Length: 100
Image (tube, rainbow, N blue to C red; front, side):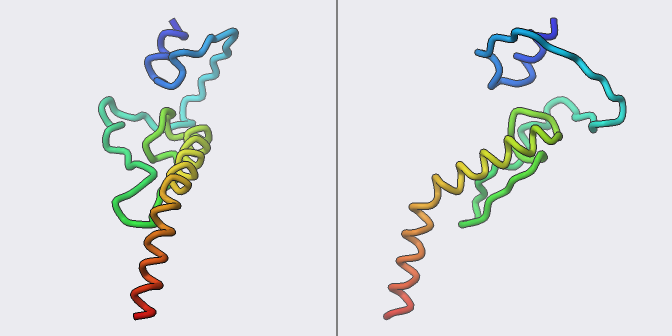
């Protein structure tokens, strides 16, 4: 049952082979997320040029936790690297405008 729940809750874990698990329950350690809230989490890349978000509250596969914050940071770094050529091009255009 746990393996099925993990695969349903964490899409990136669907192809993983679970070899062992340990379940720890701490009643007040996390907030309770209501069903259907995930679509409202912001992406790491935003519509604002050169402005990125990282944190457990952003769009990622885990709940609001240290693991979620870590994954979000990695996704944010990937978004920055993906945008780097576009940002460099914008910087070059800005230099040309200033020079004119």
